Structures are given as C-alpha cells and as structure tokens.
Image (cartoon, rainbow, N blue to C red; front, side, top):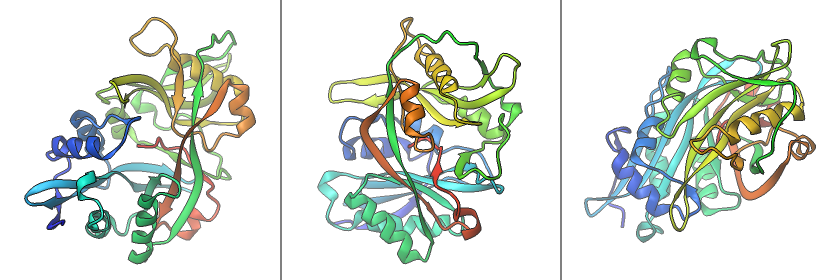
Length: 315
C-alpha cells in the first residue's frame, strides 16, 4: 500500500529515481542513469522542472517528473513541460500509485501546456489521459511517434553537415503554416543540450550555396538491453525545411559516424512522425516495433487546432 506521495527536488532525487525507473521499465529501454536524469531535470527556461515520488514503508517506490522545453507552434513560441520519467516498481503496482503521482504532479504544472508520451493502449496511457481529463485540461492527441532504424550507408552528395553554435538559436526559418510542434531551444537551452553526459551535437544541413535545409541533434543514447548498456546513435528533434530525402540521408550519415567508434553504426530515431513515410524509405529508413502516442495537454485551442505532430525526442 502506498502511504505517501510528495514533491521531491528533481536533481537531488535523481539517484533514487534512477533505481525506480530501472526497476520499472523492462528492457530494451532508455538507460535512466542518475547523471542522465539530473541533466534532463535541470533544463533551464522560464519554467522549473518538477518531480514527485511515491513512498511505501519509508521506501520510494514510484516517480514522475516533468522537464522544460520551449516550443514553436508555427504561430508563436511558448514554454511547456514535457512529462516523462514515470515509473512504479512492480511490487507496488495495483495500489493506485500512478494515479496518486499524477494527482500531486499535475497541479504543479498548471496552467502551462504539457507534452507527454505513452505506450499505445497501455494501462499507463489510460491513467495519464484520465488524470488530465479529470484535472480539466484539454487533450490533443498528435501523430504517434514511430521509431525508425537506418542501416549505415555512405553519402556522396553535395550537401554538407555543420555544427550549430548555441548562439544561432533556431537555425531554420519556420513556415507559419506548418502543422508540426517544433523544439525551439533558446541560447541557454542549446548550451544545456550540449552538456548531455552521453554526448550530443546539434547540426545543420546546408546545400552547396550554404542555404540551410534542416537541423537536428545527434545524440549517443544509452539503451538498456537484457545483457548490457549499449550506446546507439540517435537522431533527435529533426526539422526539415521541406521534404528532402537527400537532406535526411546526410543527417543519417553524420549520425552514423558521430560516435567514438571508427566504423559507421546503425542510426535510430525515436520520433519521425512528422516525416512522410515515402521520404523515410527513400532515405533508407524502416519502421521499428517501438511506438509511442504523443499528446499535448492544456494548451490554448488556437495553438493546438492545426497541429498534427511534434518533433521532440521521446524521453
């Protein structure tokens, strides 16, 4: 029986949260190390990351938290929470811990918009959506985030990939008619992204004239398997100014050789829901079994009405 649910300090609680999330999620999944969680839960911005924990017999058995991102809807930019890092240890399930976590966490996030991801048709998804509906927040479902895998492949085109300094801000102009909710980190958030303890680079693809065709991040993501922690190149927060398979191939090739190893490695993307399937296939990608439903809760209807997808990484 869960005796108590209370707010906790996100960074200081990261080692305990790491133990809970590692025990709650079944491999293959992200490796929720204390260092990774502390980095995620210290993102700067106009909002402050929040975290809550469930306790039973004095022992922490559940955790939920929200970090901070600045987003671009095509109609303007706004600050929002990204709710993730939710887990309850198997021995504590069935006692209402997850619902209790949300009942304490959601008021801490109100009245700001919240992006969240959930496994389709899971008990966790039902609890998540019910919690927001009961809180009176609007619920807007976005396109499902499908994982994509790319085999390493040499790219010999004329496009080039260059690092983006934090001071550049969002390096590709947004089309106000876009239906994709985009990650739009300002200078401080850019700098924080580059402090990812696992390794990360923010890059831009340019044509031969130096005009930008897209931008994104290549991270060395640590994945927990049944046997070990494996580092894999991951494309995150990708944005293409227009449909261009060659630009996507250039991103993939860069990510495949961005790690410590000398040989090109397979590349993954946790979310390319905003890229049409034919373009993904033309760039050499194939869909993987992993899928997460994406939601935007509590945002102004004027912001959400035309949005169909989000380009944030699934965390």
